[in-house]
Length: 160
View 1 (cartoon, rainbow, N blue to C red):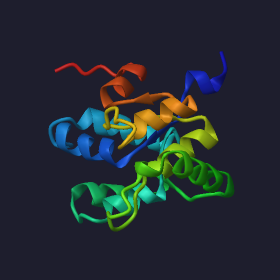
View 2 (cartoon, rainbow, N blue to C red; view 1 turned 30 degrees about the vertical axis):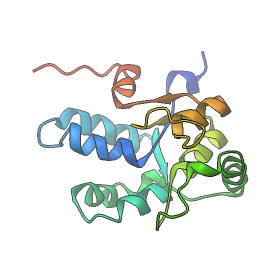
View 3 (tube, rainbow, N blue to C red; view 1 turned 120 degrees about the vertical axis):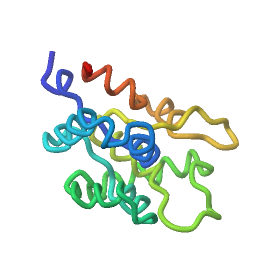
View 4 (tube, rainbow, N blue to C red; view 1 turned 60 degrees about the vertical axis):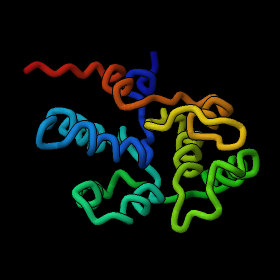
């Protein structure tokens, strides 16, 4: 088994980070947050800069946390730009043209596709009229997990 298979890298989207904050508040679930921060320190949990820009819309504790972990947010490169163009060409309804500001979904998928990462999202399946991250990941053969599946994959257990 390769090291990559033993220690996968994850690309997390905005919805999963928001759910992390809302469903697993840091003051109640500190071990989860410590494990998340360990993954970040190991370079195994990343997100595109566009996720940071989406979080920036609300100056809350999650954005403050994101600023403290800015190293997890990756810049776009040429390969990712090509993937974003392909993704938005094949799935134009993945982004809402009427919605102002950054829309990170195609960038999350492009980063995962270009590096072989697993996507972490709280989005559920969409439909042809409104595809969601899991639909697009499925099309490109990218593994897609929710937060609990991430905890299980990493074999995190919490005793009380």
